[in-house]
Each structure stands twice: as structure tokens, then as C-alpha cells.
Image 1 (cartoon, rainbow, N blue to C red):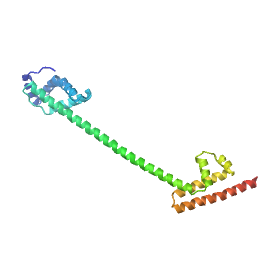
Image 2 (cartoon, rainbow, N blue to C red):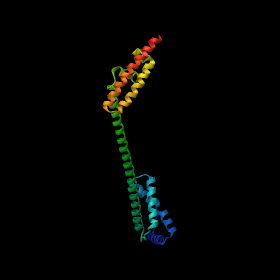
Image 3 (tube, rainbow, N blue to C red):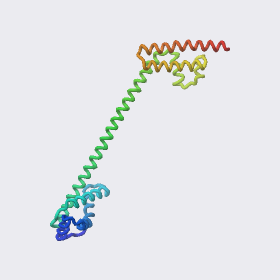
Image 4 (cartoon, rainbow, N blue to C red):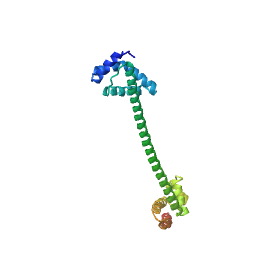
Length: 216
């Protein structure tokens, strides 16, 4: 830190109050490094943060200068200005961080609510599908399981059931259509839809099988 006599301090700060920019430049050159070290030591933050605080402090010195009678008085004033600037910046950073955390929590809560709704929807659909499957006959459930759980081809299912591939394709189409209608219907309507699809499917298969026998 460059030494400043009391007389020099009185002259410079008096000129600073009168708006002399050159006086500010002299004080800045003489006390900037001292202020930076003070801020680094006091805040225990990195150099970038301390530099920002120092710049804020010197802006305050320029905007609201004070006449100082001695170097000690000058240093005490600059110390107060620097620490005040640092405190304001810490508060600003804390407020910004709090806003970010609050924003993140709100988004997390919204995401959790959305996920909960999705899980409820999945549970509801699963329950509805289970009830719709219960209303199907055992043969129909078997065909659905072979196709969609075991991943069997239409030909493999047809061979297993002893009917034609076209009959299995037709039965699957009817069953899926019936399941969709049953899941969106009342329990009575759903039961009627499932029974109707089962009965119609069996009749169609018997007709398909008879046609195949005639062709043979």
C-alpha cells in the first residue's frame, strides 16, 4: 500500500468531493490492491468475487465522496464502503440462489404431481383392462396372451388353436375392438360387449373352419 500523508489525503478527498476525477484516480491507484486484499481476507471468496465487490465499492466512493482529515480516517471509510458493498453482493447472491432453489422446488413438485397423475392413470387403465379381460372367455384370453405376451405369430396361434390364420386375425381384431369398448363402457355394457365378441368370434371361427374343410 502506497503511503499517503494526512495532508495529501485531505487535499485529495477535498478535490474528490468537488468532483475532481483525477483525485479519484490517485486514491484508486493507492488503495485498490489494499482494498482487494481486505475483501479476499474478509469474505474468504475467490478473487473474481472480491474484484466485483471492489469495483462496487469504488463506484460508491465516486458517487458519495467524503472529506477525510487523515490517512487513518480514509482507510476506515474505505473499509466501511468495501465491506458494505461485499455484504450487499452476498445478500444479492443469496437471494438469487434462493429464487433458483424455490423455482427448482416448484418444478420438482409439478413434475412429481404429473408423475403421480400418470401412475394413477396407469393403475386405472390396468384395472380396467384386467376387468375387461376377466369378462372374456378363457379361449379369448389365451389367444390374447399368446399374441401379446408370448409374442407368437398368427400362424403359430392358428396352429395351436387348430383354425386358420385368417380366423385368428379376425378374432384378435374383434377382441381388441371389444376390449376398447368394454374399458370405456359401464360394467353391464362391458360384460355384454365381451360376451358378444366371444360368441360372435366362435361362430365366425366355426364358419371359417367349415369353409376350409369344404375347400379341402
